Image 1 (tube, one colour):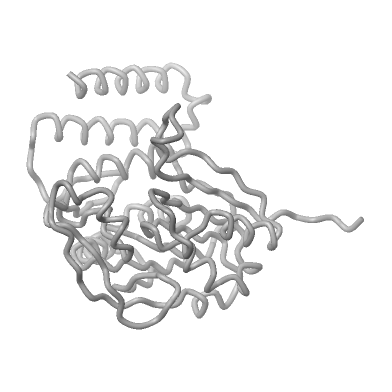
Image 2 (cartoon, helix red, strand yellow; image 1 turned 120 degrees about the vertical axis):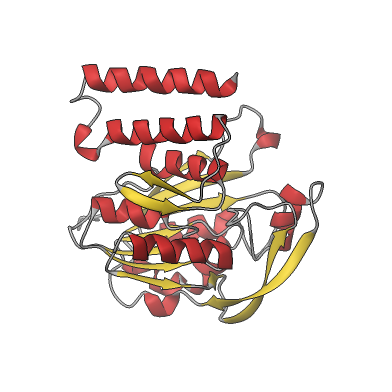
Length: 289
């Protein structure tokens, strides 16, 4: 059984952490995160239904246990959004979903100032609850999309989506790609905001997970990208979209002296199975010649 094998590997990882604590960076609570991930694995395996769970010292409200498990693994266990900065960073979180990344940032930097955007009403409800219940301060939240334009826009879900689903998108083709054979694509109207007004000072981290709208946002903030020190984003690619080209995003990074890495969102040896990338960038400290 898949869950049994995963549980066994997690227990082995925990034992390794206990035997070799220095190598496994215990100051970042990795042992506790592994135990929390094990808890999520067991809850899913035994189909235990709940709307809340204790993770990383927080009470977390969520809509979908499988998606919570995936997000917790990416954000807390793998630390996909880990970066080095000052003790009081300014962070922009585009596509905050239920707020797990916000909780991670606050765990690392309690004094951080965070602005978070989430257009899906169900996800936003959980995001708001998670901030209120855990008494998190210094976070400004917006029930709005980031898409490169301000105003009301179309926002798509599917009849087969889970509550607070991570796959909702302002790009119809993106939802259709994943859900056309499973459910009916549904058009909704949500508010969209331009990001550039929020880049009015140095941004320590720009995090984007906005399901196919990355190119539009990068184009809208291109004149202010020099104020961004780090960026991390998921770039989704399933079809040709001239408004969301990877080359344009890379061009913006290079014009603003950002070094970057690109890795696969999902491990595969077949090019035809590639559906997106994780792009991580940092502004270089250029020395005078």
